[in-house]
Image (cartoon, rainbow, N blue to C red; front, side):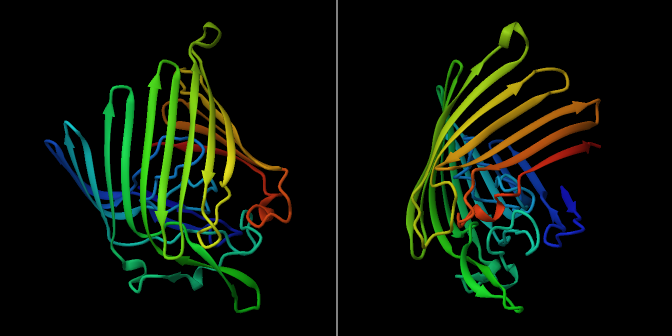
Length: 326
């Protein structure tokens, strides 16, 4: 699946990527895939902690859901006691960042040209990932492990050629264990993602947990309305890659009209002390080949002195997108 974006103002946002291009074979209980692939792990809505195989495409959106294609050799085996997945990842993709003068760049811009690696192999290091998943009664459970180059960089202060202060990405070797679980009970979905991660100078735990309750056939219509609530905690310290999700609350609403146009709206907000990140995502099919999408990101009550969000406090935006499928 090729991807191309051209931006007249931000050369870092102009890029070409192959999201997926692979050979796959399924034989009985075995599946194998070789090439560029995309893998998603996780159950929560506000943050996907355990989703670590693919690198984030940060110039597309800040929600960390847009991913770059990852070179991989993927082997999967289905058994009565669960699905076992094994990944060899022979190549690392650096995270993409906005240019110096672009929006959503942060207080201090990132200079990806000076990128550093802990491993002497750089972006040619072989990483590995494992996962077991199973459905047990009303539970969907997954355990995962990863050892290799962190998809989240730590940032080092540096001076760019013109004398500008910049942040230089440093990609370190980490080990991560994760669990994702979802329990279904009638109209309730209870969700949890949790990880433990070790790096060269840090170790921490993080979790996202909460629920989604759905009101089916709202007001005797075909529409369903879901209410979501999740708590986000991240215990990383100063020596770890930075995050804005240290101690936050997420509230959201999901409306599905269940019509022939697949109209759906998701709106929510992640709230921290004094700062709120709100979003709206809506989509509707138009005919057989077209889809209309609306996306908004709102930064509310952000302090200019905030080291992570201060640089984007005035960067709220709305995107209207029309897509055609062939």
